[in-house]
Image (tube, rainbow, N blue to C red):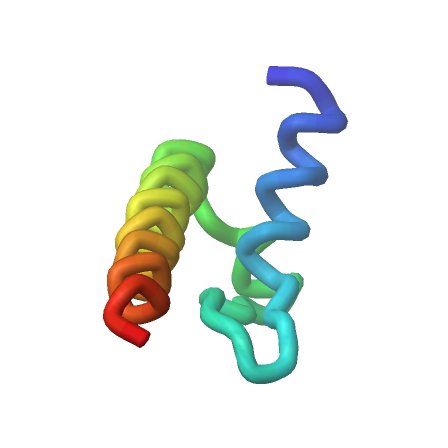
Length: 63
């Protein structure tokens, strides 16, 4: 794992767009996570975002 990959993972765990979805973990908590847990959370977030995008597309088609 590169430093950039590690940093990007922390950013994704900690960043929370206003009105959007995400975990918004405090940086200190994210830094304490084992790498395996961090990677699992990042993978799961990707799955959740894909499901949400699919639901939005489906809702837009009904309009």
